[in-house]
Length: 565
Figure 1 (tube, rainbow, N blue to C red):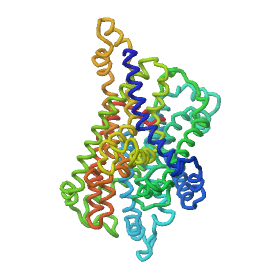
Figure 2: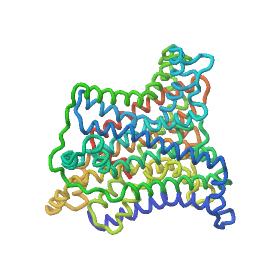
Figure 3: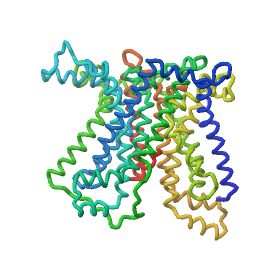
Figure 4: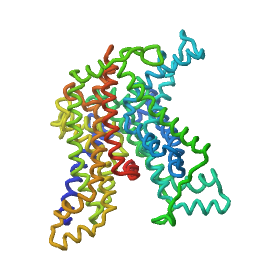
């Protein structure tokens, strides 16, 4: 690739990020730190910490993120350890099943949890059948503090695959000679794991935990489904109607951004420094053991239990979608396909499917062009400043989606430079850009992974035979990394189809609703609304499952490297 072309890519990418990543964040900072007279002030930020409602929301958000990450770790690390170390019947199938929750949006799964744990939901009915509770006084599992823990459980069961993928990739790179040396010196079992293995896993676990923490801290869809308003993300969402005149939504967003970046910085300092060096290749291949019958049964039971509880919310959604009435019983009383028939002919659902396909397709094309170009600059050139480009391309994983969506609203207000993109009129361009920015790291990481595994000598040989640099890229390199490009494209497309924060915030007219906004609006309609929403959610789950499975088949264990910051 020529130096002139590399510089052009660098400039174009920098301008794109400057306009649609840096500028939205600047607009938020301006709204939070400058009053109507243009004078600098920190009074709005102070008021956030003096207002009991805002402080409670912030503490709840931090607590939710902490416990969601902790529970996800407790699930993911044992799963990864068992997968890496042991062979047991059905291992390949179970390793695929434990990844399913990441293919199913927590926003949809929350609907199922509400059906299971509601006052007259399946769990209370089951307890009543067992004579543990009375039908006249059912337990309100989602009342009071129950909403908080319900959201924690949904987040953890949906996001643990991110940690599992990172932990499994890290374990596969650990030289088994280190564990064997410790064992020869008398360090065995759990002591060996906590003294040797776990410290070696630290960088990979940190990478996954950062994503899970930020995702849980800024989660908007699940709290909305649980009608839990005492959390910062929902307070920001409800303050959008006053974005033009009220500075406190800006201040709340700044505080959320600050804590997200603070956690990343602290985690990087405490857990990301002084990584243990390992040989480029293990001194010998790692062997997986086949435990005794009891051990095999234990592995199968553990994987089955985690998979069952992780998929239970989504199984409930499927049952709701096929039912005409489900109230006060363990399973639905009657079954029907009517919900799917209505969903396929509803004035809200059909346009939303078309809209999502349009937005996601355009975002994928944009990401493919930008992601491949950035990856070539990072891997195939020594251009000064490419480290900055690398950081910019990955930062969207660390910056909350709700923050970016709010920033896009702020920068398109009347009188602003980008007012022509105002989503109140037509959010199409802004949604495509928002999806593109938010999902770009997936494409960049996929392309970088492919280029790092493909020797540059193929391009050099072609150029020695008279093939121009650009032509050699298209004729030689791109076909060699096609699997990585397809995997990245599938991830970008599927994640864009079911993006929650940008969709709920930016799509304000029904004719432009994407799928997730339609599901949210259907849930608020009495009668058939929730059943139709579940039918649409099942369609979305199936679609996302197919695309992520395709990406997993193309990338294998490298899929975990995409979910890192």
